[in-house]
Image (cartoon, rainbow, N blue to C red):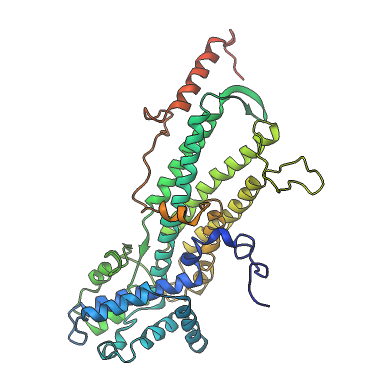
Length: 421
């Protein structure tokens, strides 16, 4: 049976496949292989500039060719790596062999072929690749998606700032509020969550099998390998990786930043789950009414119904995303013994994409070109207009000002005994 959206085991590759085009090239096996090639190439080029007599600086042409392997990495290249893996039964070694195969008939590169993967342990390549994937997933999909939601909710908060609504506490009718004020509450919460996601430093290490540069120092004991590794990791792409250097580790990078990132994304997901439940509740109370779409059927037996399926789907997928992200947050931060293989961590890491994808289903743009147009780096956050302290900037406080007038009116009709609800 061939793999299609109809035969896929996971709904991520089945009914939801069309919604995940932005994340697929980043978090898939193809995306993982692509980043491994990027790391190996960056390390190899940097070694040529280290000043070793055995490895002279590469020519401009050789550098351009190597960088083209990264830039033009294709599905066919990924398939070729998997062919090597059938023999090696080792995914990172398969990447190394594929790169070496690309040196054929290129004497300058063939001469330096054994510097591919020099002194690296598999985790040096894997942890940096994971970091590149997570940074891209965060900056290109998760943050822009949350930005769009915040922008839409802010617009709705202003539009409906004067629309009165009976609020509820303990499930019962309570004091009046406005639709805009209730939406403003969500905006402020999401803004804080987004800032925490964006603030996580994406860490990486390249220090050998147990974190001590053992193989490196055995080859060149007087060379500053820590400074070299830091330079490769922190130099911006394409010559480096543009990540944050992790100076201390065992065989594996500690993954504390991953736990922090997954927890921060899960927090944003929880806020969106709250919003989905609230909107669902407002629909059930008759506060909101859903638009009918021609041809759509809300119920197979009750044609008058329009079920809030988008909010129900959002709650389900965001909840599943949190289940995966919270497990990964706990699992990845556990450090095995320094001499112990990191296979259990690798097994868990394969599910990172699922956690982001289930969350990403609620964050993707309606049109692929919209997603591309709105991508931005994590450092370029939109300016806040509603402050978390209950006060707002002059151009963004309409819902809060309206709510203030409602509270003033309530005080003027307070009960003489001072008791509230």
